[in-house]
Image 1 (cartoon, rainbow, N blue to C red):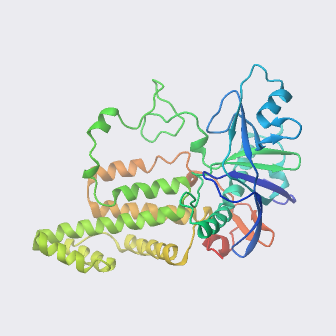
Image 2: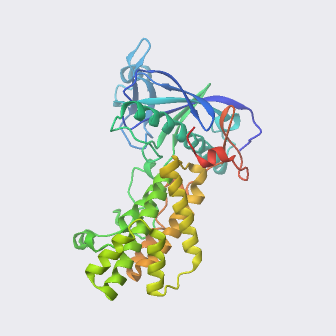
Length: 400
């Protein structure tokens, strides 16, 4: 990537998974102290050639529902392309947003014969980085809309909810997929740890069996384990804020459970319940009691890491902090160390083995995808080469 090339204007288009009950028009959103020009687009449609796919690989048009002089986009494209024998399928989009952006000219030039695969891969990473870096701006608009309307269907979005974007600029445009997992129209392989899209010898997919599913009992999971799984899932989906919240909830729940077990051994059920109620709002106290009762050998490092994660959760809940893709490494560390702490407190070797091997199933998620660092300045969000750190404003992700 040539980051010395000139910055040029580009438009980012993204469809929300819900309707914004707002007439089409231009909107100005201030995020991190910078004004961003956005537009709520008029009726929008996607047109597919041959068949519809979630990956949008067969999409030949994403734009206004009608083409000037041709009526509907689908019918107009069928005539223009003379696809009489190929099905042309259209799909009405929900609310589509257009964001004005700036991109390096080298990233916008079309794929040439002299470009090797590494160059093309870097360009794809650039586009995905640029789009994902604008997610906080999209969410700022959504939060303003929610506060004005209390629409129960609108919510903050992550790469999972808006995985496919379209970048358009003078002379061209292309599709961008933030979440590689959702660009695959095939399932994963049976081998544990296999990557999504791989297939087994029999062509079938599976990380478990139908027999195992029938025998599984969710009530046997320890308190907080479902939240622990949610934390990893949210991380891979690009919801970094949610991943932190679920990690803290999981560890707090397993500490209460483990402490309760120790208190029952020593004082009986009724007294154990009374003591737990007395410390309901004192998690540090519960943790100290559990460590003392069990003579825990867990090192202080994991507990200090978790206290740092709880501090981030406090900022999320009380200060409106929102984590962005610039915080991925911080969140990945918090999720991993939180899971390790959960493992040691729960103390079930069979669950630990499954949980730790399951954590390797990360292919196709945003947490394992390459991204260029982003920074916010007077002209908006700009990308830079690896090693260039973004200023605190974008890393903190705080609303303004």
